[in-house]
Length: 133
Image (cartoon, rainbow, N blue to C red):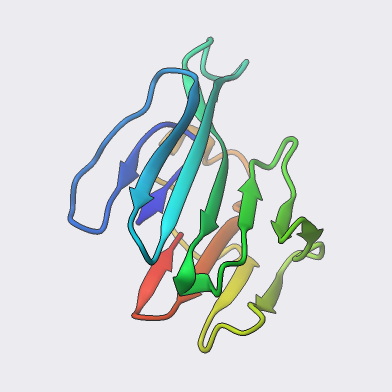
């Protein structure tokens, strides 16, 4: 699963859905993992929806709720508590063997329009080799 601060994603099965309308949608929904996205228009997208926040939960993450907001107004939280407040930094997800969240500059930007900004990229490593970037 790979997403950017716009409505384009690459899913586990290689699909590339786009979400242009405002609202909250499931990006992944299974018994083990749920990923929800919040999409809303921005000044940068001329009113078209962009990804403003994702929430990750389910048994794969020991029923924690991990939320990642956008750079302008979002925090990174686990169960409502801020994590990764320094840049760069990393966090081990409690009770999740091999589960971690890393915040750094490593990775590619999907949208070339964002190349003028410093990269701030979140990587989640979860059990069963599930990765979200």
